Image 1 (tube, helix red, strand yellow):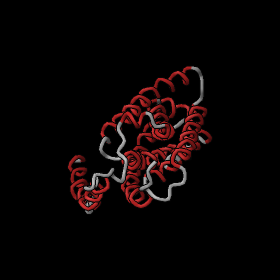
Image 2 (cartoon, rainbow, N blue to C red):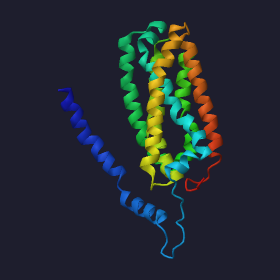
Image 3 (cartoon, rainbow, N blue to C red):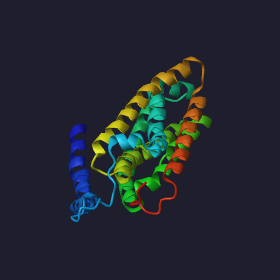
Image 4 (cartoon, rainbow, N blue to C red):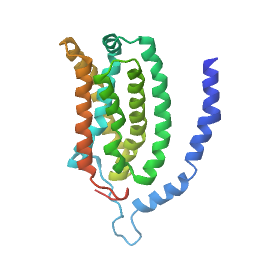
Length: 245
């Protein structure tokens, strides 16, 4: 019964919404083709199209990467050890699991809303700021034990996760072009998978060593701060999303 209800919601709400959001896709696609195609007079195209090798040699790429990897590392480590988290906070595991509903809902809404912001402001200008909701959530996790903090954490996590899915996926095309976008995204996604895989091990060692979940949350927050600062230096003031690096 629940599956039927979920399928009906997808068909009635989500599908029309996606079609509406993609209403001007043809115009944007044609404009992108004009920007990346070489002019008929034989001169170079207006936008440089970076290869994967060129991106990997570009210092600015490594300044932006921590802001992309930090949320996956922090949240995967905490969620993986959620049993220890709820035990140390004296929360109910059922309550913590229920808060995932808030995470999913907020993540979906934020992802859709961020799309319009990216279209107007550009992914580069938003990159230094999308970690802030998760940072506030980790701050609450580090200093408070009330059960409502579980909901605060999931909401902050959901906002950052939803924004990242739009901002990060657009960022590489915006800066490095679209010709080699698949190869560039493959490198980034591989780095995300590696960071997510290392997080449970690293957090597990810390927990076994007696480090409290509050200190782990504060350390995770520091990673986000470093990523935010590096991202700010990487992108700098961005008056237009069409500026090339």
